[in-house]
Length: 296
Image 1 (tube, rainbow, N blue to C red):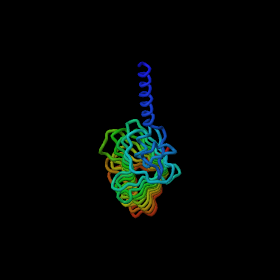
Image 2 (cartoon, rainbow, N blue to C red):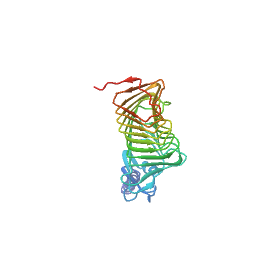
Image 3 (tube, rainbow, N blue to C red):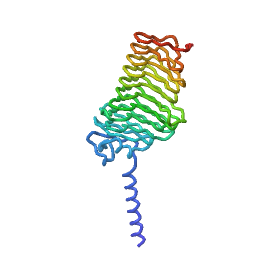
Image 4 (cartoon, one colour):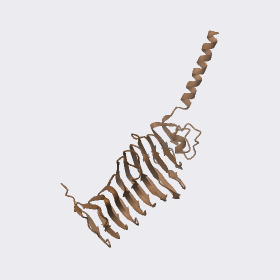
């Protein structure tokens, strides 16, 4: 009887171990255009969507695309990296946000080598409501009706947008002011934003911009309504108003070209500081900075 009981116990333990292993989250998972979300998301049995893969990926892990595909909308609630690699990895959505980031206050989320397409009815490309750090690198955005990237974070959040292109939408990148009180800091590096209403806008926090292009945006290239924007080595071309700052906002510019805008520098009540190394050519109303920044 004792031997039978021991044998029965061993069978139960092995069965439970098998179940635990089957449901364990992997540090790296894969998606494929011909995958299936019923799969374990391994390289040889990939999932079909990012949403299917993320539940099988451990916090701090990575989801990679094996081949071209549209991998669906996603809400991210933990530290994760999603990498489209060399494939045409896309997030195609209609009538909703492509990716919602609602991660922990110390979590890092990295979105790399992805194409975001709202197909003319999508809302935000990326909506960030909480995270420690969000990195967006080598991505393209088009077809959204609201913002390509909206930062409306309840946590202290740092956002990097690098080597990316945005076309269309009401706003390119916006720091919204409604969620506070955590500080939000963003770095925009090697980014092109075109054909929006307002390319870059802050209602809270600070944005640093370098080596970027803002072209053919109907209302503003950069608008510091509340908060601050620093612009370095960037081009504003054929916008409604290239730069403007509201009464609670400020903009500082160095080595910036303002070319063929309707208004170069707007006349709102905020501060626009110049390092006196900028160029203004072909603007119907050039406008003037109202402060000077000395470069040491």
